[in-house]
Amino acid sequence: MINSLIFNKDLITRYDTLGPRYTSYPTAVQFDESFCHDNYVEIARSTNEEPVPKQLSLYFHLPFCDTVCYYCACNKIITKNRAHAAPYLQLLYEEIKLQSSLYDRDRIVEQLHWGGGTPTFISHAQMSDLMRHTRDAFSLRNDDRGEYSIELDPREADADTIALLRSLGFNRVSLGVQDFDPEVQKAVNRIQSIAETRAVIEAARKHAFKSVHIDLIYGLPKQTVESFARTLQKVIELGPDRISVFNYAHMPRRFKTQKQINKADLPAPTEKLNILQHVINYLTQEGYTYIGMDHFARPDDELALAQKQGTLTRNFQGYSTHANCDIIGMGISAISKVGDCYSQNVYEIGEYEKLVTAGRIPVFRGLKLDGDDLLRRDVITQLICHFNLEFEQIETRHRINFNDYFYNEISILKGMERDGLLSIDAERIRVSPAGCLLVRNICAVFDKYLRQTQAEQTFSRTI
Image (cartoon, rainbow, N blue to C red):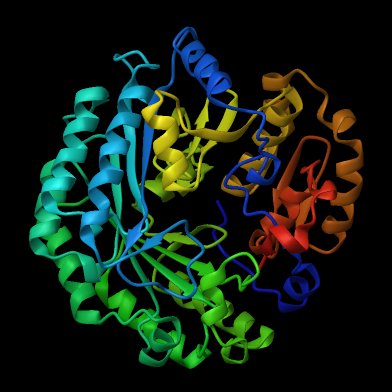
């Protein structure tokens, strides 16, 4: 763990380039459309035959929102007509049946997540039905020891919603806030009061949710150091267990809704860096542990404990405590990580319907990882989760000599060592307190695909 961060503005400015967030390696850019239903089914079934089959993690994508947030880069459907959710849920139930038929029932669901979109766009009855279909098809835990989480828009939830979610088995909530400043909210079309946010958190505490997570974004239009400092103070008063402070990536060519943001209103690069510096100083002073990249958690939170114990991992939902799970993504655009493959479902509901009703897993692209991919994924995961890499562990797992295999990469890292980002010797790499904010840059050294990728069209800035 990094016990103290050093915010070196000169280093950050020099290394602030474009690069992946490494929620996977290889990244989704490498997914191939030749990977389809048949590939996925074969690999999924084969995981049941492993000496010790992995437990399961389920992700459900519920894409509906009744208003658009201009910054959003998620796959979403904007509609005020709640009836649109019903036919989608019927298709989702069919996919649940198809997916569950591939996995033995003794594989317990240790992790479950509803994302979106706005998962609470659907009615209470529909929430209950979705969980019932899931429980009928998969072996969910009944003892509250799993990590069952849901993304909440406080504008789309009340005390009754929270009580229902707890009764359905959810024990963690993640609340989208982004910013409490009225001018910023107006600029991004997300008007959300502190009162409605507080009401949801208080309800979650009343019903003994194990963790409350708040998402913020820095770099939004109209933001200043002073305005975001006021937001942070209000967030701390709400007492979340985890806080994520994401870097807004303005990429209107890829995400059309971002075209509605006035680029002239975005904070200048210097101001944006100053906001980040204040975030780090303030949250660490308030007792939060820096987990990595954009995540902070209380020292007794499961993320911080997993990092201390060396079991923290990273997946498409961010940092996670469940490293040893096969992840099954369901719904449009959902991504799975099963066995040694990644796969992604189709984006459009029409194509989703066509495939699911034909009895096919709605995969449109994916990737079977080879030995080199698995090795590099292991290296990147260790660095991005723990800021430390012991060569002997990698050598034992992958039967290589680290210094020989990564001779060229080590040469590049030596330059980073001279800049103070890390230290490297014959046995390990240790990321320095000044380098942990640039861990994406360090990980990128081991990314063999990055040189082949048009980064300016694909990835956000690393800071």
